[in-house]
Length: 462
Image (cartoon, rainbow, N blue to C red):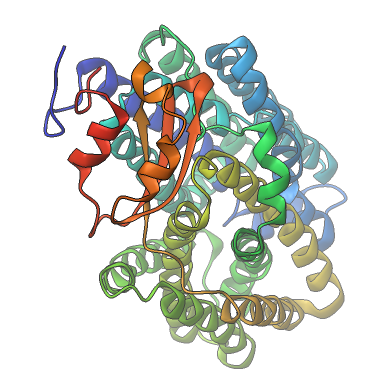
């Protein structure tokens, strides 16, 4: 079967992209719905202290960070579906434990169990198994969008559902969504007929140490860790600031988050376009980190009325959304050829670790320094990140392409050199056991046809 780059995704590919995006979204909803409500509603739980509420907010990140790469690797061995099915059941179990808890420790235990259902690596790998090369980026982008949307929905739906059904009801709801995800994975997402060893979407053991030694990647890992630490810590304090300083009842917080997320989403778009088109990613990144720092100082100094807090939260989410969207794109630019899957695995682990650290740190700072303690602490974290971001090099403006290789191309000992000689090619890795080459190219300079001719494959055959 011959197909061109303009051909649409097949029915199987569309079902895979939509189904797996929904599985991802439902699980993220369950993770994030408690974020805007635990600080306020969690005070009614037996034994609750600010430090323990912070721990409950970030606890899922701990098990998620520990298990994310091992479970992804296990899915390469035993298959994606078993890992995803068990992960969703574990997640639902954690939600049920939290829903039945009357004390804060029960909620913490539930959140730790929820995090143990770490399926994101397996979901991404399954998407690679079910999509062809030329549609994979599009399918991955669908999942990326579903994560963003589910975060926004969670921030708005969390306060509404908790007001209607209480904290117990909210956890039962997240358990239900995990089970809906389970039905989607069992009955809607097609079964892959093969498992693809794919270095763009899964962790390669031999690439792990070089990835951990790569200073440019480590800066980005530190960045996502701090970003999620600031997010979790801020949400130990912001819901309380809205109640105590702005006098906004907790059941009305949803409209503040809705406004902030909508404005923040549209507000970041021009900056992303500017960063990519004008090739100014470093400037935009450093600017967004500086904005986060200023927001935290603003909350500390001026966050005493609803108008001021709303303004601060809107600006905060514009910077947050911009960073959340541009960091993964920087990881894929900076990672070496064939190293993107491993780099993203380490990056995701850092993200979850940041959530755990932020929740724990936020609760501790609040217990010892009140709301101001949290805002000053978050500003200090942002200042550390700013110092790291400013030392970063301007990233290479390249994208990764995976080219299937013909038998003839595989026999060519000088293939890597010949790829490198093509204009616009910055890095290449030939992986014989996958019969594929990973090539980093500047899309403004490279000629796709000459790449494919060298790979010896018909242009994008399947």
